[in-house]
Each structure stands twice: as structure tokens, then as C-alpha cells.
Image (cartoon, rainbow, N blue to C red):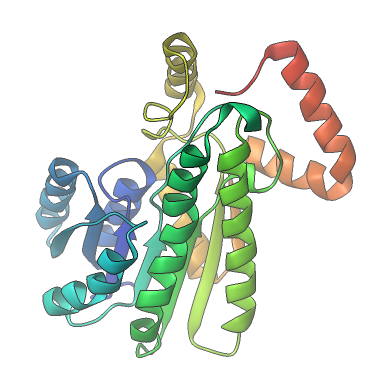
Length: 271
């Protein structure tokens, strides 16, 4: 998809982080937005920014893990906009801790949002995307969808699942006018670290400080995502660490995991 003018884009997790930046970048390219999130105040703020750019923005409070709510969402968007051309399944959460330290409830929660949220978005919006002369789906995986990171087992599980789902969907839709791009960001300044479950306050503070100091601005990440969409790329890695992880895993699948194990032993777990 090269031309976003007057297209309608649905973005989940749109109230902050990459979702907010992606929504604004789409508006600057001429798109209208259907903003989806649980954070109504955040949605209102983003909608105002999009309005100031001369584009229309509708707000939709929704839990992407809720099947019934997501099934009803396309009709809401169509009533507001009349069409859907672009879908970004961006909403995501994190749980810290090794496998034995995470409850099954933790797993169910993160799988519901990070994986089922992507499945719900694609399932319920795909029939409407098929009606467009050109359409695109963006699914947010992660660098942690490329390598297994101790202390992030549930998050890695969901992001590997998003990767497999997206690559298969790309193949299934290859002969259609619908593109699919799977995104693997490294460190990007978002709220996911601040909202991570099952993490000690001091570890959270250290991780937040590191992200604020070193991570990529979401606006830069959004531009990289949209450039990948414009080139109809199946996947894109964002940030140096994601690119390095990708190549290491390709060159030495087992050796990369050994290297990660040694790094965790020396520097401690990733919160």
C-alpha cells in the first residue's frame, strides 16, 4: 500500500506508544483513523491530535481479548467511516518471570491480548479488507519473537505465535490485494515496561530508566513500519538489537540461545 489518502486505518493499542505514533503518522499521510484502546483518556488525546491534522478519528473502547467485543467492532467502524483499508494489531502487554514463577492466569491474560487480539482483529476485519482495491495488515511481534529470552517466557510465546500466524497469513493472502507485515521491534519507548506484571518495583524502575535513556522514539518506529508497508514487506526488524538478534538466530540458532544464557547469568534477567 503506497497511498493512504482518505483510507481508513484501524489501530489497536492506539492511546500510547507505537499505536499512538502509528496513528499520527497515518493521519499525516492522509488516512482517517479508528482508534482502539481501553484507555479512553488517551484515545481522546490522540483523536484531538489527529483532528488538528485535518483527519477524522473515531474512538472505540475495546479489549482485544474479548471475542464478542471485537466481533462487534467492525460494524462500529463502518458506521463511522464506511470502509476499512488498513489494520494494525498493535495492542500488547508483558509479564515478567521464569515459567515456574508465572501463573496460568498470567499466561491466559497475555495470550488473550498479545495473540488472540491479533487473531480477533484479522478474523473480524478481513472480510471488509477484501472489499478494498488495496489493503494491508500490520501485526506487532517483537525482537522476542525471534529469540527466547529467560524471564520473558509468556511474552516470547505470544510474539513467536504472532510471527508464525503472520507469516502463514501472508502466504495465504499472497494472491490477493491484501498485504501482511509482521513487525519485530527491539527497545522502543512505550508504556509496556511500566505496566509489566509480576515485576519488583526496583527492577521496574531500572528498566524504565534504561528504556527512557536508550530506546527508540515511537515516531521513528512508526515511520519504519509504514515504509515497510509501502514496500509490501512481509516483515521488518526495528532497532539495532532486533536486527542483530535476527541475524544471530539465523546463523547459529542454538549458539544464540547459549549466548543469551551466559548473558543472563552475568547481567541478570531482563525485566
